Amino acid sequence: MVDASADTTPFFSDDNEEEGPTNNGVVPSPEEEESASGVSDRRAILTVAVLCFVNLLNYMDRFTVAGVLTDIEHFFNISDGKSGLLQTVFICSYMFLAPLFGYLGDRYNRKVIMCVGIFFWSLVTLASSYVSKEYFWALLLTRGLVGVGEASYSTIAPTIIADLFVKEKRTNMLSIFYFAIPVGSGMGYIVGSKVVTVAKDWHWALRVTPGLGLLAVILLMFVVKEPKRGAIEAHPEHMLHRTSWLEDMKALCRNPSFLLSTFGFTAVAFVTGSLALWAPAFLFRAAVFTGEKKPCLMEPCDNTDSLIFGGLTVVSGILGVASGVQVSKKLRIKTPRADPLVCAAALLLAAPFLYLSVMFAQASTVATYVFIFLGETFLCMNWAIVADILLYVVIPTRRSTAEAFQIVLSHLLGDAISPYLIGVVSDSMKTSHSYMWDFRSLQMSLLLCSFVAVGGGAFFLATALYIEKDRHLAENYVPSDDAPIVVPKRGRSTKVTVSSVLI
Image 1: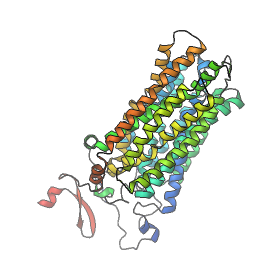
Image 2: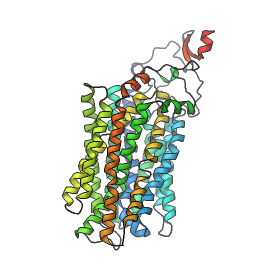
Image 3: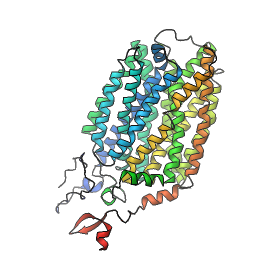
Image 4: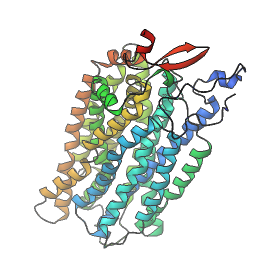
């Protein structure tokens, strides 16, 4: 009898292996009968909890730098363009490594891949906290290497959840998983600003997450169990032939719902990437411009805006993700196109509030925070829904590859370029070095976010035209003539080619 506690996928798995050992007539326990994934209900819940913790930690680390950006600019004496590179190099590393981990995640043990990636990320993050002011390039390098950990995790974790739950329960678990994005992001700002206040040194802000990262590795090793790919669905993994990476990519490029929703999500990434890095610095410059605060002439700088923005990000993220899922659920009763329509409406509603938050910065600080809160809430309505769209329009054996493709495209055209682009545009608009132009130039460059949000809404509206057809195709997927199928052979399932059956 197969040990239910053992990982179901060895790291060096073979695409041509058979379904696996049979029970040799032994009646399986009730727990094994309940879960086709090979993971008990209790273990599945614990697995989601651990994955949420790691997701929260990833985003907390990513935005700790943004929370102390003013201190970093003063410490290294760098321009807005170079400040934007801190986020860009991280996203580029993350983006280019995602396809590799997506390929591995569809073929090998996902838990092992995540553990190695997160352990490496923790060590590199710790190393980045010891960079001196003469070596800004070293900080860029270490921040780029941090992308290894997130690439190994973000492409794989949603596919594990997809293999543990289906339908409404999967949507609920994904919404919990994606709560960690805004909450972790907000905690990054909060932890960064508070650590600087206590330690009087921004380097210590980067030394919080590495220890938690090592804890995450331990939890992954001893709590998370590798589920069988697609076994809980109508087409389990052993009935779906794994095709080559090139064939997977061709199939994804012929999937309009996947492509259009990815372009829509790219707009979300562009806007959130811009705000994540620049919003606290923009709010600080607005306060200096209006005379509410003094400029930063020596460290530590005033990081109150990072603290407030972090709190707003946590609350707006929770409300946004929860409301997005609930609105989508209720609307599904009336139309199967609910998911892309909710995403489109959320982006189109976010655009005017983002515009007002930028324009009101010099007039009213309270109004600016209110508009930022509303804009972020609508932006966060997309996270869990977009993930769910990908999982139900793509077959199980291509999901990690699809996650990787979506990560590459959304970051390549989204938050990989937006922080640097906003910084470069801001630098180009400055006609003199003054506090007024420091504020005005960044204000004008941030207006770009509103227009990008409108474009993203248009992509999601287009997705609604294809979503029904593509979901039906994924749920009723039939392998091609050359793909292996399952035929009975003395009571067991065996993979043979279609041509063998016909002969």
